[in-house]
Each structure stands twice: as structure tokens, then as C-alpha cells.
Image (cartoon, rainbow, N blue to C red):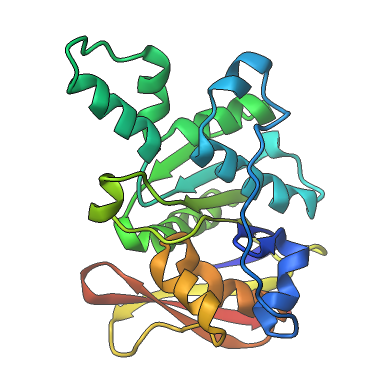
Length: 264
């Protein structure tokens, strides 16, 4: 499975957008962890903007960061959204309501609890009407999303925007599904080499025979190991200074996703 990457988006602790993050990923600038500001997306109508939770804001911000470095418009792109869970805060509030005497779940909370809510808000904000896929594969959600977006890109011969996002849940959910940090990442994939293409990629799934590629900086390795979207950091580091290399990512059923990067 071969395709190209045209643009990239990234948000995380001390990773304030793709351009600002490249030096940090490459180790030429220190990684200084900081809060990730997630304002409500201005592209949304006021009513929808008020309803957005942090996962929606994170996903849209990551996607917009990728579009900011692209000549393509969001409404012309198919999309794949991937996350290890939905909106944990909303799920927590619904559980509290169901455990109360009233047991009346707000319709707004319900529609924000479903896994494709960020994709829905993205389509509203960008007036995007092409196909959108939302998926989840626990700790391997980014790898699953990359495979899905790559497959669509290759089969449909069309540009696809991959958006991955993960952030911690409130307690008591957090004690059961531990996600460290807040990370959003986006890749704009295209089937053919273009003048804006940054790098070529080939994907292969093989039996797991080696450890996944890790980050050299301890703080970034903690973020990689503790956040499902953070598993993308070694790949993003490689994309920050494209050269021929292979990134290994853990995948389902004892397999490894080999991401072969080809400089162009």
C-alpha cells in the first residue's frame, strides 16, 4: 500500500502546531510540556460551537493545522477520524444521570457521546459532504486509522484526511482506561506524487518480531507510550526531516505495522 503525505497537523503538551513542533520532535529544541489550549472552533455556527466538548475541539484543531499547510480545501476531502474512545466527560455525565433518580439523558449529551461526533462537527464546520469514517482500535487506533485512510486513498485514488485524537477521561473512567496527555495529529494523504508532497509511504503488516520505534526524549517517549495518538510521534519525527527509514508501530493480534518512509 503506497501513497504520499502532503501536509501534517499536530497538537500536544509542548507541541503547539506542526511547524512549531518539528524542532522539538527532532531534538534540536527542548520539549517543554504545557497545556493544550482548545478553544471552540470559530468555523462552527454558534449553536453547535457551544455544544462542542474537548475531543471535538482537539480533532478539529488538528485537522485545521494540517489544512493550514495545504492548498486543498476541507470540503474537497474524504476523512477518517480515529480515537481510542469517545467523549469521556460526556459519557461520565450520562452515567451520573442514569444513576440518579431522574434518569433523563440530555439529547445534546447523547449525540455528543457517540464516536463519530467529531467527524460530524468537522463536516458541519468545513461544509464537507464527502465520505467520512470513524473508527476505534483501543491503543492501536492511530495505526488502524492510517491503514484505513491509506486504503481509501489508494483504492479511490483520492486525497484523504486522517485525524487522530486522544485525551484523558475523568475518574472513575480514567482508572480503567488510562490515557496520558492530550494529543491530536492529522495527515493529508494523496495517491500520487504532487508538487506539494513531502514524503512517500508504504505500509506493511507483519508478525511482531521487534519492539516499536520509540522517542529519544524521555518526556516524548512517555507521551508516545501513554497516549494512543501519541503512538504516531516516531512517525511524525521521521516526517519532520524526511529520509528513507522504517517506523515500527504495534498493531492488533501480535502484529506490527511497518511504515516505510521514502524521501522524494
